[in-house]
Image (cartoon, rainbow over all chains, first blue to last red; front, top):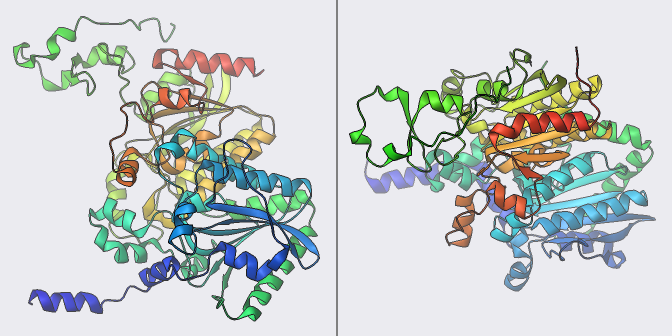
Length: 274
Length: 285
């Protein structure tokens, strides 16, 4: 077979998981601030800073009204244009971003306010400053503290769910994913380059990693797949809002011991043996 | 006999390092070369010196058995869940072969059990660098979670020795979830008022750093241990520049405020035993 024919053959192979990766990374898709404004309108009041070091713009947080109920919203924001993306560090949070998120969660716990997390990140930022300020420690603390947070927590993956940097906002009572989102332990490129020394095999890695919303649903890692809302279809945001509200209502009715017990059990069964 | 009574510094071997060809012939396995200072070291001396280079103090990586012998009182270690073993749950290509090779050494990347340290009953988990570089799969997470749950029920302290390349990508999202699962178990142990000591050994990275490695009440590390979330190679690729030499060593993270102390191997057991005692745990027998 000639090289050209081989190329053509390769093109014909389909990698539906990698198509989902590409869709999740599409720079034209809606970001966390879009979801916040479509779902909560003018009621959102942004709250800044981790009270430790700085305000990480890759993480946006605040309080808004969900119908009659105040809720805390924390999202990882990639930015909608080049200027914003640079400002938001392309949605790659530093430790102070995760510490801001935890501060707002603790604040929500104090006032028994439900927490909605919107995840869209390729991963926690891998850089000198992030390491110096304890990226690993910041994520670890969130995992520990979220597990026993005495207020309902719901996470929706609205684009990329990149490894520990996504999980740091996803120790929740339920985790949902948009149909065109992905959630993985490592990027398919990273996986392919480590395992096969060839990052161009990312499409194959995406299949092997089982990272689409459907995969995660089948693996019982998420509770729900959400239809991808279109920017011009407000009804879809309204129905998402209703779904979020019902889930919070259900979990607000539980006493906090029961709530955190269920949250622990949710994660406890993943990979449990016997 | 005191475990450390025979630990003495030995510097007389250093001269042989530069010209190994001048050294009288000895069977190769009797010698080991220090990767840090290139000194040729007699394996018998190394064993006596707790696998620390007698020339430069470089801490060689320990096997699980050696680590248990270092920390647990003689013959006191009883392994839990030894039969739990990694499986290729996602049918990940190439993983079966890797597991087959790794399983010549052990069933999983962590060994958990119960022992006495300085006479004090303790749950001890030791990660295994020889099993897929200590990567955390679902069974690793399950064993650590069970160890913490057992300790919580029994009112025991936990000591975990970490060594890990991070979450195991061949088990995909299920590996990632083990970070949350183990963290939850650590939190419950902590909320029960029990002590958790982590001992970071070289290298401790990725998903293990971002979960139970950084969650100890007291975090100790061996000297010159790589402690990182993103490994140096990943950061070099992002930054496109060389990193400072001591970046992400245990001394570096100590200075940045993320660990409590760097403890050399000869002081490790006595330090842990003293800490256990100071937290009110009583010696048995």
